[in-house]
Image 1: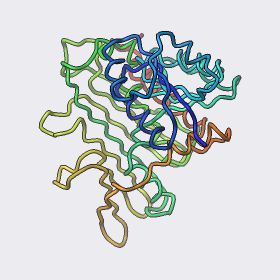
Image 2: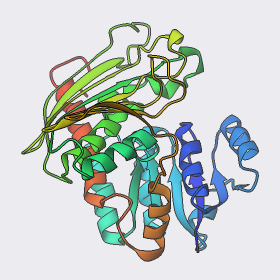
Image 3: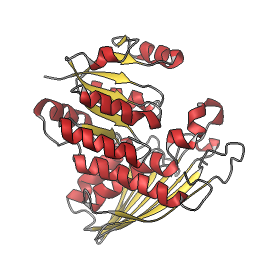
Image 4: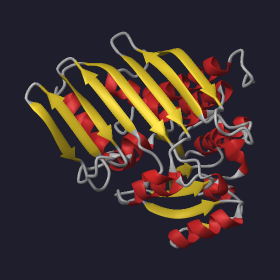
Length: 339
């Protein structure tokens, strides 16, 4: 048995990965809503089985639709999620799930009141096979106890193909809230905690795009739990010559070894993505993660059907966004970015 789902808000192309995540696990996409004609046309051609509806209430009022996906403009995602949960739907949101603490508080309140599942698809974890494999290795004790994480999230800006909202701080939420949400969730996961974490320091800046004053093109944050520390750097400076949109990396330092992930490209020349390097007392090895199974989609469908919490603990989902929002606020305090 599987589920029927629908999409509301297609503004970020992560929606295609979100949909594929559930389709690959056996779910059925039945409808979508998008006020933007160009986005709707592309989505409809990709998924002709889904009916485009002019009013999203047609999706919300349909009891056969159990889950709503959204990759709307970041500042609008929380409102869509709240409305969906109030109509008895579970939710999978693109990251960031929200752009303000007020939205986070309201989403948490409605989730608790309705008992619905609110999941943010932190795709750099859930849809990245090397990250999943790293989780398996850490759980098996391959590098001992994790004591530090280093996450790098470089991105390619492609100015000519970005919509206006991408450059408006109040709409995309800031670089640490947006891209940083991925890194905050991975920090919590590999630190082995759902809630015990805090932001120690954070910065944001616009270093190379003065014509786009709302854009934060670089940022970093320093995180800690009672037993681990972590550093995150994010930017929009990936050069065109790399050959892919970003050289995302994650290094996990353990008491008995370390793991480094080159998630999207091995600049040393190995083809493909999802490269994992494990170094321990026995030596160094490269592990190709191409065939590692992704458990998030099947687990989320099972959670919807069985009212369980196996895809991701609800507390960790919210804490990751709390950390990202906290870092964003700290970085902007006393600066030109202060809201």
